[in-house]
Length: 116
Image 1 (cartoon, rainbow, N blue to C red):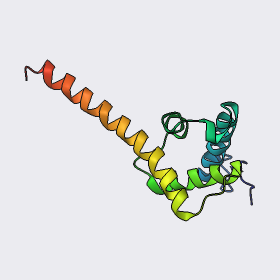
Image 2: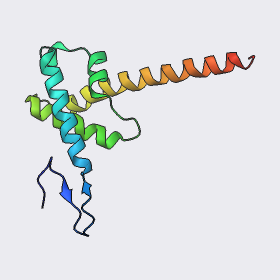
Image 3: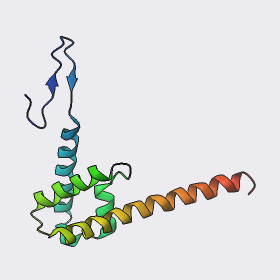
Image 4: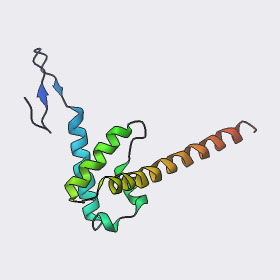
């Protein structure tokens, strides 16, 4: 059995290394915690910057929630259930809204190039 953050060898004799998906989340959470700490702490960072740092995957909302929860625990930020949800939602909406704006701009450029 491997510990989180370690690679495990394939026992079929192929000597391939496999990394678990969980390792990626742990590494990303650690990076986020370090980045927020470098910027002066969670309370001193705006929602727009938090959205950039977290970089939530809109295709994996459950994974985004787990990542956010892990980061909050590591930072020692204590929020009740509603506060935690509202905080996540604000940051998530900021990131998704920005992505939607980029998509609209790209569509507008595409359509203008087609004579529309």
